Each structure stands twice: as C-alpha cells, then as structure tokens.
Image (cartoon, rainbow, N blue to C red):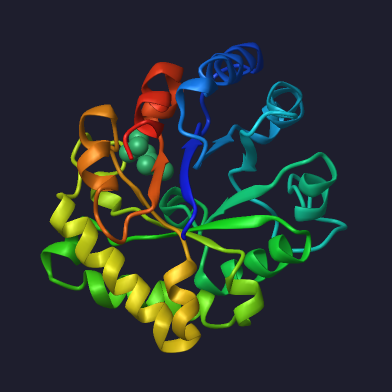
Amino acid sequence: MRKKIVAGNWKMNTTVPEGVILAQDVVAKLSEVPSDVNLVVAPSFVHIAQVGEVVNGTSVGLSAQNCADEVKGAYTGEVSAQMLSSIGVKYVILGHSERREYYGETNEKLVKKVNLALAEGLTPIFCVGEKLEERKANKHFDVVGEQVKEVLFTLSAEQMANVVIAYEPVWAIGTGETATKEQAQEIHAFIRATLAEKFGALAEEISILYGGSCKPSNAQELFAQKDIDGGLIGGAALKAEDFIAIAKSF
Ligand code: PEP
C-alpha cells in the first residue's frame, strides 16, 4: 500500500505569527482527516522551529522547502539537511520548479541535495514537471523522464524507497489551471513505469503526488486516479479549511 500524502508548500508566505496560527488551525482540524492520510506542512526556514512546536506530537509531518547542496561550512545563507533533521524536520521539498527556474537548480545539484537529505533521514519530496511550451511541443514525457532519470536513477533502491515524487506541471502552478485527471494520471503512470525500469517492483511502492492548482473542488477526481497518491498544495494550503478539505478528498 502506497502512502497517501497531502503536503502544503507555504512558499514565502505568512509572517511567523500567522504561520503558527495556520499550523494550529490545521492541527485543530486533524480529527476530520482519515488516519491513513499523512499531512505535511512546509513553512519557510524561519518558521520551522515554531511551527514544529505546534505540530510535534501530532501526525502532521514537518517539511522544509529546500536544503543546501553541501554538508556544512562557508556557504553563507544556506541551511543544511543536518540542521533541519536536528530540529525534527522529516521532509524536504527538492527541485521545485520555482527553485529550478529562479535559483538555477540543476539536476546535478539536486543529486547532491537528495543524497544529503537522505543521509540525514529526511524524506525528499522530489518535484518534476514540464513547462507550458514543453507540453505544447509534446515534450513532457521527455522532460519529466529526464528529471527522474538524471536524479533518481543515481540512487540505490534502499534510498529510493524513502523518496516521494511530486509531479507539478509548471503551467498549472499558481495559475488556477489544473491538469485534467487524464493528463495527470497519464504522466503519473509514465513516472511509475520509468521508475520500474530501474527499480522494478519498488516503483509500485513510491508515492507520487500531483501539484498545480489542486484545490477542494478538484482534489477528489485527481486523487481517485490509480497512480495519484496525494497532492503537493501551494495556494490552497494557506487556508486550513481548504487544506483539510483536500486531505479529506481521497
Ligand atoms: C506548488 O507550487 O507546489 C503548487 C502546487 O502551487 P499551487 O497549488 O498554488 O499551484
């Protein structure tokens, strides 16, 4: 049985006090969420310790939105995987399209980050997805296949077993436009088939989340797809009510 996961990527939103309230609101509604659904919140680095105090001891997992591609040392402004694990962080979003696009994250860098995160016992939520022009040119399978192969094919099966994948078509992120359930299922199945080329039956155990304008009104039809195991949620994760409604959509 694959893990069902709904993860909220708060991005660069909320002040720390607002983030603490948001986390408290999520925790307050936790009893509404089926026990087999794993909720994760990913606030900014600045929020993590305080949000951690709210979610520690609950079933909500704490995630970072990024980590450094070096272990430690003279890397001003960076936050290491070890620092994150030392304060109870369990997940880290890696390779988000915004980081690939605005901060020059390459697959090469992501190999280092994924390895460092795994070495610290963090679960990477590894993001893949094509841009609009790539989808229009029918290149989405090539692009996503390359992202999966260049990063995840470098891992051992033991490492891969601790990775979660998020398929996020860039054209659907924050745009209000969502992939149809058929488009999403097609590429999720493709990602799983690609994983199977290297990891065999393990591919069936890997959770693959959908992200891109996922909201209460479309989560149910997306999560009903055979290869969609949950969601990575941006905008809708900033309202506890919507985030919880999404988590109840399986
Ligand atoms: C995201 O950026 O991870 C995301 C899915 O954003 P949104 O839900 O706002 O499209």
